[in-house]
Length: 209
Image: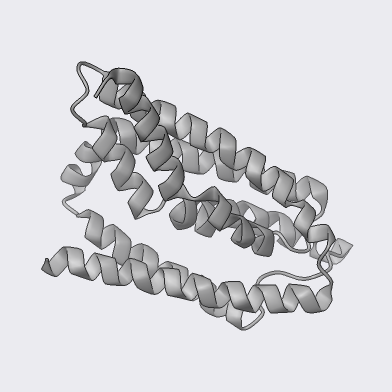
């Protein structure tokens, strides 16, 4: 495969694994009740954090895992358990208020910082699949530094695309009423629980396989 072909395949694969289109509904759910400024902060920090995580793992991921002595399967199981806790709260309708008052402002600012890291950046966007994918491409068969450059380029392109998709997707918030918010939150909570369980199952297979 030519270097250009390797770059293109890496970009397409990383974008597909990160799946910003599939994650958009969760971004919408976790920023319900936020004003435009707070949603923009969450968006920018989420893209910056998850892109930085993937860039780091593309460069030194193999050494980090080896240094701490844990496997990708352990990462998947831990991420799945934490993600299930978030999903449970969503099913109970505890993912943020539907209206942001002045009294809630300080709490909302703290929460916007939290959701930027977990669960949006980790593990929804920079999950075990995305991390393993960039590590594989970074250590691929391209000559010289081709593998690392392909992985870095794939992360940068995917991060830019995620920003655009999430930015345009915020219009969904304007069309949701209170009933729609409640229904969406619970449906997404169920889907998120399924994602969490799949993470754990994949991790267990990785341990015993």
